[in-house]
Image (tube, rainbow, N blue to C red; front, side, top):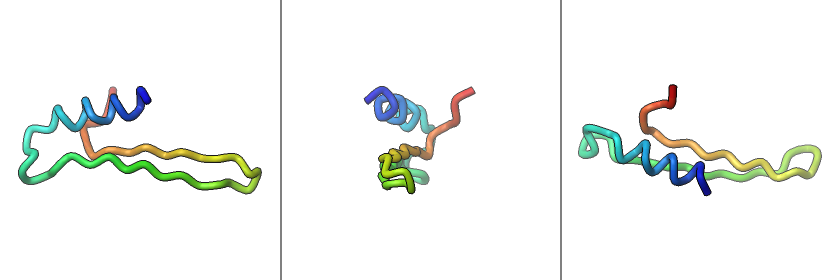
Length: 48
């Protein structure tokens, strides 16, 4: 849940929302070991 909240905070920091609307992508997959892999990405500024 923190990852999604951080993504929202990052998108909120975008200066030009009109030209580059905030986006959070959440994807899941089952790997070869039958473990679930969850990927969360956003198009906000990267963390340093």
